[in-house]
Image (cartoon, rainbow, N blue to C red; front, side, top):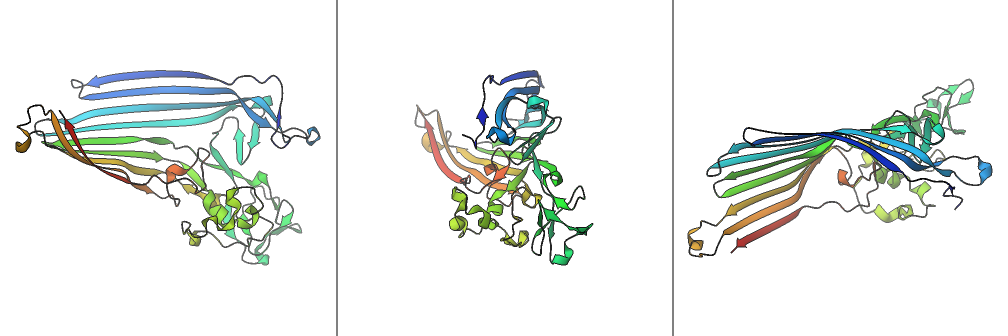
Length: 355
């Protein structure tokens, strides 16, 4: 299709070069174990849409040549901190990953390539956002800067009262893609888990934590709530103005009240107004159990090996500054559209009987 791009001849398979070094060590008679892994993964010859002259009639041509490098460290650490099974024991496990990605090549030996709302640049991260820098609102026409008789404009459309203030990075009196900045990362800088298990005589308690730190997200849900004027012509479910009208899941006091009818498109999603910290710490699971195996009323059952009663809570609570329902619902591109089903808490009461 002309609006999808030309798929030419001679396309090749993408491939991966991966290198990994692992170190495993145990200490104190295996009470402490550590597994450390260093890796580098190069995804090469990937296919992307490259711009072509308008005379071709296509929006672009799909070509090989994109390469992304991921480097990182994986650490898995386990320790039996207290090991007295007949009295009290405590086992802890920590696993974490630190990863950095980088664009190492683009098709046609390009240094930069715009794909959607992303600016890919050789030598820089591929998951960074490319956004206009928001500085508030023009409260009057007199506040709109004028330089050399030229009023500040957005691709030729002058700013007016009620329009957003976007920083003119190159001071040329017009806001274009050249004024966008690369900021934040959609992928966490550090993520992993922290799990602990405690036991005291017949009672045991397990607590599983999961965390992701250093990631950002675009709250597209908030942008679409305000930008209904420009979305109504789209052929998607988000173009229906009232689809989220009854839900009060956006803090309206957090965003300036722009003129939604402005040709500037003030609530466009590619601005740092909607960029949020999506780091989180989640209590993934808590289990409390009690062993009844040695209970008096069960000792007469000769074939009984184990009797155990337990209560479990999954997805108990999430600690995060993110204003959306759940930071785990942010998609792989770093956008939160509000359509995903949240991971609701679940409660389980169980009884195990081994004969």
